[in-house]
Image (cartoon, rainbow, N blue to C red):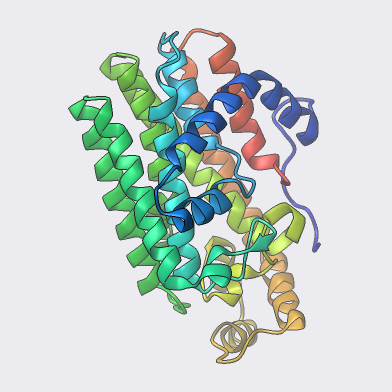
Amino acid sequence: MIGNPSPAPADALSAEALKARIYGNIRSDLERIETALQRHLSSSVPLVEVVGRYIVNSGGKRLRPLLMILSARLCGYQGTEEVDLAVAFELLHAATLLHDDVVDNAEIRRQQPAANTLWGNPAVVLIGDFLYSQAIRTTVRYGDLRILEVFSATTTRIAEGEVLQLIHSDDLETDEAAYMEVITRKTADLMTAACRIGAIYAGAGPEEETALRDFGHNLGIAFQLTDDALDYVGTVGELGKPVGNDLQEGKATLPLIHALTKADEGQRDLIRRIFLSETAIRKEQIEAVQRLVLDLGGVDYTFQRAAGHLERARESLEIFADGPAKSTLLDITDYVLCRRS
């Protein structure tokens, strides 16, 4: 690992202690989510179940369904009927992972072979479609038009984000604004929808709904910024994918984009030759770019941007009374920036 500029948690807890506290508070919710997920993966077509369970059971944190449940609880909901609606967010997330891996020709996902390397691109694309349709079908069952409108609009924006990312593939001229648009659509919008729909489901008023929308938006952006920074300073165990994966896939993320604005002509030429290489990028080339990005402040800048969004996320929760749901959401906010796994 090349350095570790990641800031410490907001309080005195270590990252591992903070993670343990979060999981201690959400364990029962995770159990309900897992049970519901397995039920929604049932299909009369065996391959659908096999591939669906492979991606869903491969180690995801269930952050998106948890955000929906905690947001509903924060707004006063006290029942247990929300879990299937929450699971729709994990089904949609899993579908995007399958489609991402096909588009990116990925070989590793969460430290195991990507589904497309085992079953092939056609099967994985179609099973991703199945998960998409299951997610939509689940939201329809709740009979709330506003929930369905928010959820369906989110699926559209995610798809648009995928296309935008494809347009910017292998493009070193991508600027920060274009990058932010991609991560907003691809990552932040799903977390935004989870928090907002939690508020809608709980019958919250406009102020609470807006606050949770803003919370999810800023948390989602910070989550992706941290991921992209860790791609330059993390390890395979922390990322669940090869280090330097974004570079290999021709993705100009914020650490690299910012570093290029600070690089001299010789440094830019080196980055350009490696980034635009028509052959697989060698380990030593990845490490050379990582060192440059770190030295030029790209990683620190990205973590700083993430910290700013997390501060705005915390501010969004100030209108809510203190309680277990708020405390857990704040812990999740702190953990996003210091997480190493």
